[in-house]
Amino acid sequence: QAQLVESGGGLVQAGGSLRLSCAASGFTFSTYNLGWFRQAPGNDREFVAGISRDQETTYYADSVKGRFAISRDNFKSTVYLQMNNLQPEETAVYYCAAVAAGLWNVHSSRSYDYWGRGTQVTVSS
Picture (cartoon, rainbow, N blue to C red):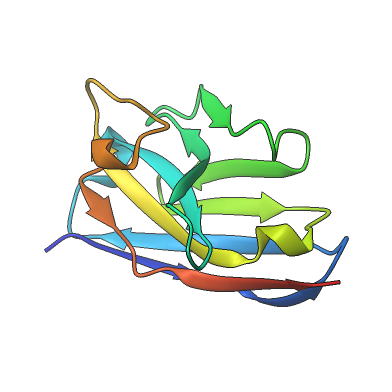
């Protein structure tokens, strides 16, 4: 059974940093493209970052470019999201997601096969 478990969320002051992790199991991690999304109360789930299965290609929402970095360790079956200079409006539940290699609309939550339960990130002003 495929499973994704996020960790690393918490409370941070504006301008601070957090590193999220997402540990995968139950599927062949190295053959899946991965993404991070976030959802604030009352808002739709939005794309944050994505990374191809071979780690050669990364994608970012315009709002996080230059501040966030996605990476993966295929030996550990884990994907990471380093978040720097966090802002209060980025308070949300952050989710990781996986999709089998193939046609991949990295920005669309509908493209993904598996989802974690999320980790809360709260940024205070």
